[in-house]
Length: 183
Image 1 (tube, rainbow, N blue to C red):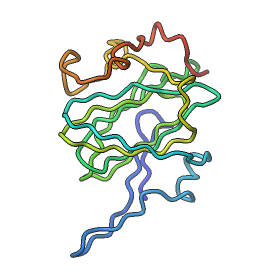
Image 2 (cartoon, rainbow, N blue to C red; image 1 turned 90 degrees about the horizontal axis):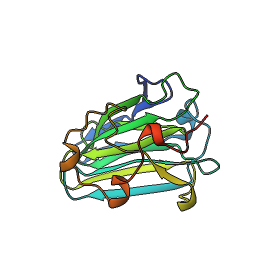
Image 3 (cartoon, helix red, strand yellow; image 1 turned 90 degrees about the vertical axis):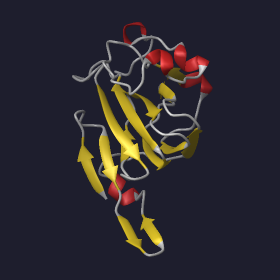
Image 4 (cartoon, rainbow, N blue to C red; image 1 turned 180 degrees about the horizontal axis):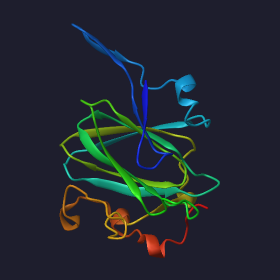
């Protein structure tokens, strides 16, 4: 498993090895021992999302303490631009983001630790995203950040008005108005 740093040290790109032969491939996509060098929390839930249309944006989402979640994100089919925004007020990278293309072809994964808002934009039709999380979903602790906040400077691959979003995701506050951020 190759573990690479990003522009924000706590966010990591993880590329599992694939062993290919005439039948297809085998890959160990998660290994607790290898992952322990990054994070000590155990995963408690696996999520699977399917988006039929390209330029579907999901996010930017996060859960607050005590139900904050770290996420390990990968793509089983299609391609996404995966984004993690640092919302830790005491961090020197507060308000900065990492954007990484994940796909079924490049086999990369993104580790998004607690303290980050997370979202992605699909780049192909019928894209399937799988992610492990370190805490259970909690509606009471579920919040979001505006995907199109100019202060974040995210170069989404589509215009905000052309993006396909849920009503909920269109209503998230901008970073300056965010009532909750991590310390």
